[in-house]
Length: 188
Image (tube, rainbow, N blue to C red):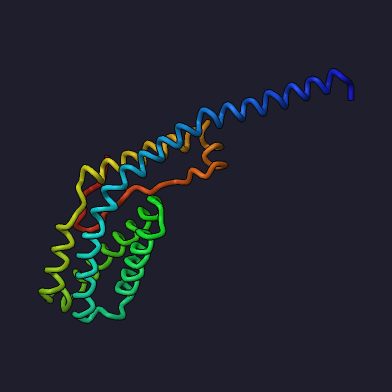
């Protein structure tokens, strides 16, 4: 290999390393800030959702007492509520949001099961508990703020320049909060 080729190769390596360093130095702070905004926007929801899920747990207990025990919807909702509780102790905002979405989906499924069963729908304890769940919603402004922060973070995270940095440095996706039956729209 000639001396000139070595110098060209060395120059290319220096330019490549410099480019990568510049990319990381410019994109990582932007991603950090966007993820921090998501985490900050999640905090009010983390404080409000436990009450909502306590009322859902009451609705599940009423459903079970009305003859729903042993149904898949009962088992799946109980498991989702358990994962939610565990995420409050051991999870980050992303894990908690994913757990909340699973609870919301199972809560919607419970409502559909109640509405689809004439016998259980006729049970006043079940319908009262579901009505309480439907009216126990987190602040719509907090939901919208969180979902907006997630969308901004995802736009930053999936930007052409930031995407390789996000992938290498562990800036994973964050879910929007999708409230189920009786919840606010959460749209931004």
